[in-house]
Amino acid sequence: MVYNYPLVDRDQFIEIFQEMIEDGLVIAQQTVQCTRSDFPADQWIQNCLLIRGEGQMGKTRLINEFFYIALRNKHISSLCFSLSLKDSKKPFSAVSLCISRPLGFTETITTATRQNRMKLYLREHRLEQHLSLLNEILGTSFNETPATAALSPAEKDAARKELFRFLCQKTFQNLWVLIIDDAEFMDDESFDLFDVIWEMPQIITVLTVGYQKRLSPVRVRVLDSPHVCQVKLPPIETLLHKAVACQFLNVNAIPLDLER
Image (cartoon, rainbow, N blue to C red; front, side, top):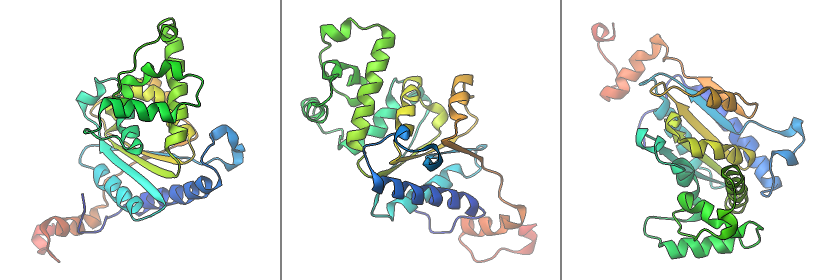
């Protein structure tokens, strides 16, 4: 959504986001085939911004501003989407949304085309025999091989994560900004794979979390990580309510009695 009025009382959050972009561009220029372990600890940066806040506090308006900032930079690719309760019940729905557009997948692309592209992307990978583990993420229909069928559930999860990691490394070749609104509705399967995305220094993620659905203790622990910058969105200063009212009413000023 494009807004015709400026953001009010959110300068500090814009500065945080712009600093993340500046750092991300520097690292993305250094290499695109790396993970956090390839960088000395003192060089690593936070590449996830988690924004918490009550409903109607302006989280969506803020991330739309972030999206607009990213779109204006020709060196950045960006993706913005929101989640809902139905997404939380569909396995791998969030990571599917994250990876589909960078792969060039649209609703009109056939399953056969998706599978051929994946074989091309992952032909160098030693886990090619386990491509069926990506079916729910990519919308493919690879047949399960005997080798995959013989894996335990934990081994399947590990193999899927390794395939997803390799796919991300091949797909995100420049700096990407992934913005997810209402991330509390992320499905469990996607959340388990999201640490792979956070390993990629060329991917900046911005998540908004409201209080419609309480985060599990496991998610709280995962998000309480050095690479995640957590901020709480406060109410707009009372003295600036007049400016916000003028924006909504599309006027230059309002009467004093209305302001009160």
